[in-house]
Amino acid sequence: MKILISMLFLIVGYTAVAQQVLPLYPDTIPGSTVKLSKEDEPSLTLYLPIKEKATGIAVLVIPGGAYGFLAFEEEGIAIGKAFAEKGIAAFVLKYRLPKKETMRDKSFGPLMDAQQAMKVIRTNAVNWNLNPTKVGVIGYSAGGHLASTLGTHFSKSYLPNKDNISLRPDFMILVYPVISMNDQLTHMGSKINLLGMEPSKEKVDLFSNELQVTKETPPTYLTHCGDDSIVDVNNSIVFYQALQKNGVDAELHLFPKGNHGFTQRLPVSEWLDPMLGFMKREGF
Image (cartoon, rainbow, N blue to C red):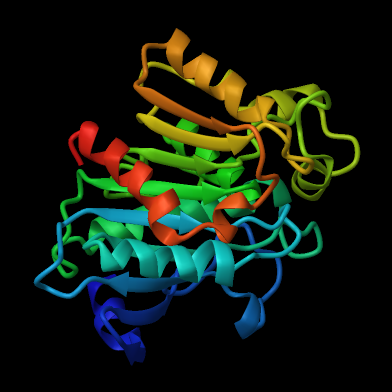
């Protein structure tokens, strides 16, 4: 993997941080049944802070899009740049969208990619001057579902992991997240795209992440708006309650108005500073 990093970096540009793009997998993509086109291959876009600002902390950034598309610019690139400016290395995940035509079980494709991203980050921590015990995840909307899946399903690796690299994020930041696959709470488009039209109760429960919280779940910051017309605010509330029940450190920031995607319409400091405050309080 280290050879892969050195050979496959594509330097896109330099501002205050360097943007680099690399394939997520060195060769075979697990769970795929067909060869993917270049534009569909999963990847990581890296934003590494300049040396003078680097803290050694990293965050995996997971954009939303209802598991039907990726809001890559507004919930990926913009987030990565903002964290890197604060000295936190950011890795924006371009994950496979669940498609039965290209995957053996489409519901596990995105999780495989998120787990692989954690492996890549931790395996190459020395190369990127990172502390492998300070790697978190931030996810937006359906990306928040994938982030919370990563943070609640880490005990089982859904891809080869012979070196037993930890797949557990050290902290989670979930922004107007889809959490549940329960019909009373879920965002139905996300559920159908991920699980299909008639998933089994077992599959619904498995991907209802409020049911998967344990005392080992990472400390979590959640933020949502009460008037969110896309993803019910109760997704964040039930996840917070599950964290509380299991003794996991959690912060829940609710706003009365702002609707879905509200952080995209705020100055960076207004959404980023509270996240950084949470990370600082948790020792990151």
